[in-house]
Amino acid sequence: MSVSDVLRRNTQDRDTVLATKDSPGTTAQRATVRRMLRGAGMYLILVAIAWCALAPILWAVSGSLKRDGELGQPNLVPEQPRWANYGEVFDTLPLGRMLLNTTGYALCVTAGQVFFCSLAGYAFARLRFRGRETLFLAYLGTLMVPLTVTVLPQFILMRTFGWVDSPWAMILPGLFGNAFGTYLMRQFFASLPAELEEAAILDGCSTWQVYWRVLLPHTRPALMVLAVLTWITVWNDFLWPLIMIQNNDIATVTLGLIRLQGQYTTDWPLLMATSIIILLPLLAIYAFAQRAFIRGIAMSGLGGR
Image: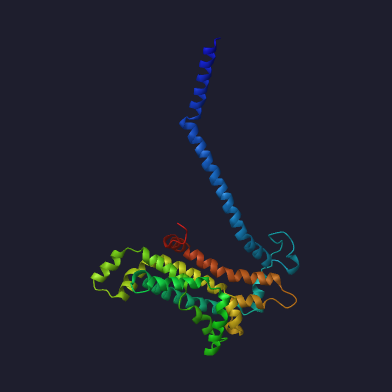
């Protein structure tokens, strides 16, 4: 065999290999495999994150059904679940009254936040006045102020008005909105088409009517996001009730958890059962508002898109 024949055969073999590599079927298969591997990796990451979030809740549920001496056992499902722990919670603590108190505080603060934040967001997004952007940035800068910095001035104000250890101390400080809620509503109002406002003005609507009757109904997803986040914040608040409330008749559920802890010993199954009872209303609210909440996050730009 001559040298030219060898070179010709090597060229043909190389062309055959390249054609095989570049065939559409092989390329599509490799793309499919890469896509499947990427999807599997993403699901594994999501499962790991979900497990990190759910593991403490599952452990609390398991501990709430055990006896005090069984908490150290590694089994997640107790051999003999002790459902009586949930009944003992209400015998040991006025938890029903605390749930009612916290619900009332959350309702009042959430209603105030939704109204005043939407009103301020509309003003910053739609009304034109001198210093609007400067005022908005200054107001937004209050987000960087830690909560602990404002606790003492708020306490002095509450004591001056005589509202210490009263429901007013739990409602009024958070009633008139905050910078985050105003920012959320401003972003949503700014995304609405200007034609809605212009058509309403041509029809003779006042500024209040444009806000209340035309634009506000279109912001329901953002209102739902703000309402759910505010409710969760008030429900889980611990520092402010701890400072302001001593009377069990107006105490919140977070104070109930603290008052279940003794100076020397703590009934941990009872404490975990109380935690689960406190968690259930939040789960119910999120399950009810899940679709609107996710839609509001996506449309308001908080989802990072």
